Image 1: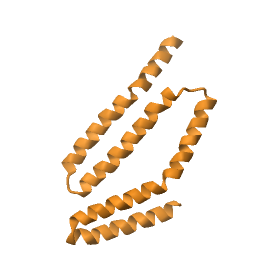
Image 2 (image 1 turned 45 degrees about the vertical axis):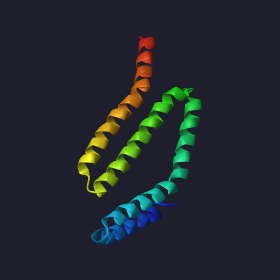
Image 3 (image 1 turned 90 degrees about the vertical axis):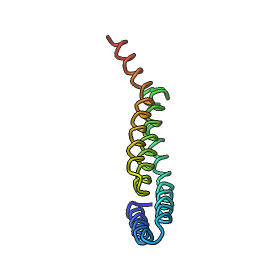
Amino acid sequence: MDIFKLAALAVTAALCALVIRKQVPELAVVLALTAGCLLLGQTVEAFSAVRGLADRLSRAGQLSSEVWTPVWKTVGIGIVTRLSAAVCRDAGEGSVAAFLETAGAVLALLCALPLMEAVLETLGALL
C-alpha cells in the first residue's frame, strides 16, 4: 500500500472523528484507535523488509544479535510511547501523555544500556 492510500485513510478518519467528537467524544477516540491500527497493519510488510535488510547487514558485518536487540527494543518503545501519548492527548489527557513520554524515554535509555556497554568494551579493547 502506498503513502497516498494511507494518507487518505488517515485524513478520512480524522475528519470523521472531528465530526463525531461533537456528539460522542468517546466514539471519536475509538475511531482514531481503529484507524491507527489499520494504518499500522498496512506497514507490517515494510517493517519486515527493513528487518530483513538489517539482518543481512548484521550477518555481512558479523555483528551479533546482542547489538541489534537493544536497537529494535528502543525503536519499539519509541513507537509505542509516541502512539500512546497521541491517544492520551486525543482523549484530553495531556499531562498523562507527558508522563508517558518521560517514562518512555527512561525505558528507551534502559534498553540501550547493553549497547552502550558493548561500545565501551570495544573502545577499551582498542585502547
